[in-house]
Image 1 (tube, rainbow, N blue to C red):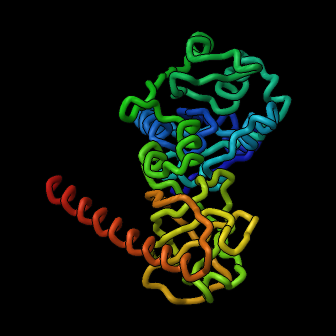
Image 2: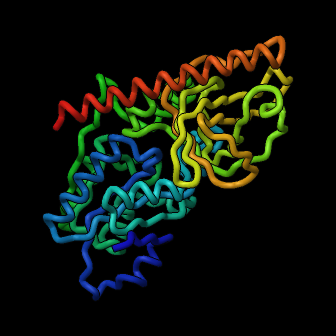
Length: 327
């Protein structure tokens, strides 16, 4: 059954009126990245919903609360809202409620949030959240207050401990820091999948194709971009996956100033000016550099491409060995 998406509590109540006897198990959060920590919470949610014969529901917000309350401090988002919804659906949420984050919602006291949103609208039988969950006006509610408020309404509360990877707590903040520093392999480990940019092909100047190597330029949908540099990537195009070398930067050899994301696909020669791309980042090869000539840049790019090919050959061999010993 396809996941249902609701854009307000009012939409939800129209679909599931109180007299319908519908019950849910709910998790609440921004879920930016839908990383390993979020995945653990969602796994617990689905298991709890199954035990209670309830429907697993994720409640998220748009825009990000910081965008409204502290715009100068609002973080660049790892995923678009549509991508967040898609990942939540893939992980077992039968319904997703996207609450418009307004000043009115921000002023809602913790007691009112539990009573009106969880109990009255969603008719939750259980709530599953992370240990650092905060809610209500000025984030005055925490997991202890959630337990106390929910007990009187006969709502079960499950608190999921933080997920740690090599001693580091998995968080959206840690992922943003890793991506901004160019540590895309670390970001991928925290996400549980490669960090990726998606968007449309944007026509370039043609200098790369004429003077260096052909590339496809991406207009990213995401707000969060990796540090400038050259990366070993995989590019998804028209249902096929290609090894690729991707430059994030301003193209200083050609006196560029505008940040671009351009990907050279190995064993691909078509010239495209439109379409959709997804670029998955695996490893940072080097910083972006300014070269004395296009010929010097081309020589370096060809070296980068050879490194990309070797990187993915090793990666595939490692994956083959893992599969062999796991079978």
